Length: 108
Image (tube, rainbow, N blue to C red):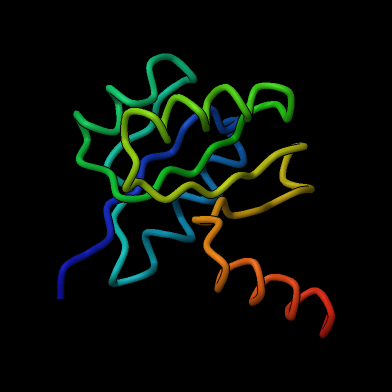
């Protein structure tokens, strides 16, 4: 079974260790690298990452995500912010995704 390639970006050291250890225990996931905020699209291309876990400050997320979306439109992005207090996944804003998200919020 192919493993999903994951790149960790901008996570504080302790949080990075926790995320990396959690993902390593999954047989279908592989952490392929770790880097600072720098040139995210280049880091994604160089690592072959399919998923990026961003650990950026909330005010920097929009810029980083816009860069990735423009240059690496197929990469999936998960965000861990506020030292681990906030987590979200950036989704393709299709009608189905929007409806599913609203239904999940209703059930929560």
